[in-house]
Image 1 (cartoon, rainbow, N blue to C red):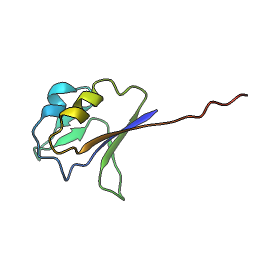
Image 2 (image 1 turned 90 degrees about the vertical axis):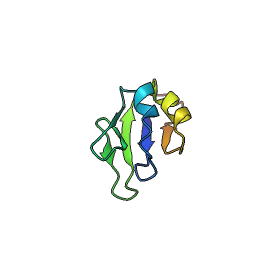
Image 3 (image 1 turned 135 degrees about the horizontal axis):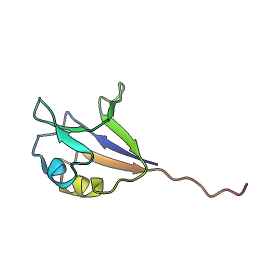
Image 4 (image 1 turned 180 degrees about the horizontal axis):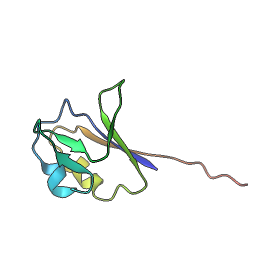
Length: 81
């Protein structure tokens, strides 16, 4: 499982994330990018979305001019049952 995070306060609304990855990103009424089905973290104010597949979101991270999109990949240690 991975987590896509967008710091909406830093977003300038350029739309590159939406153009490259409309599966996860959209522009909402305030002109800034938002995560589709994302949830706001009350502590940070960031939007977050947990997903099994990050797919095109990596392209959105690379294209963001203000670097307000992040992906955290879960590291599940190998275990023997």
